[in-house]
Amino acid sequence: MSFLYETHLHTSEASKCGEIHGEDYIPYMMGKGYSGMIVTDHFFNGNTCVPADLSWKERVEIYCSGYERALKAAEGKDFVVMFGVEFNFNKDEYLLYGIDKEWLLNNECIMQMNRHELFEAVHKAGGIMIQAHPFRERDYLSDIKLAPSCVDGIEVYNAANSANMNALGYEYCSKLGLPMTAGSDIHFYRDNEMGGMLFDSRIDSIEGFVKAIMSGKGTPVSVAPDGTVTPVADMPEQTVSTELPNLEVLYPEGE
Image (cartoon, rainbow, N blue to C red; front, side, top):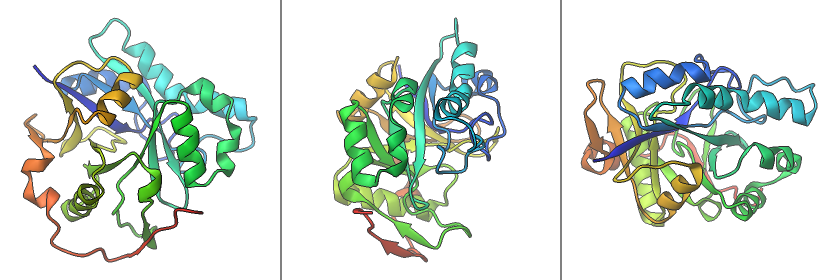
């Protein structure tokens, strides 16, 4: 038996680009065959819809509301909802797993941290930092920023990326020898490919997810519209690049 988890998901409560309320994801994701999901809304330095003119506490309360609404909606169901963060630096973004609302409330200082400082702070809290869609190219991006010394792993399959962008990430992570993750980067209901992590045993908490990823458990997968689950490693178009990046690649780790 296997268990499928969404690792990259946005709600309309905190992400400006999110179109779905937290609670509305539960029946949808269950219908897609997922056993759970991690809510990773854009933080205040990303594409957030949380007002900037409120107190830190008020902002964190709003930020966590999509996750909390999803968590409440999943009560009594065979579906686990976990908390994460998508944190932006200079348009390079990182998925933080293993921190919680209380940690955010007590760490307003993260807004002034550089990549290494955040990496250390998240580690101290027992969490991990995964670079999201590292080779993404969009019209709002002028370059690709990589920070190999301050990440625990790489999101090698992002369902919102093109195949070659994912393949570049897969090759990059393979060279680094770091754990791989996959996710849908879902903002709205979709009928095309999705992504996720497939595990042989149930994941019941974000702590369990962090432990599994860091111990090399879990398989990055693509989920077809008909529900077929395919390991990313078995998809040459997602693992072997056919083109070099169009954008300049920078390594701004000390910033």
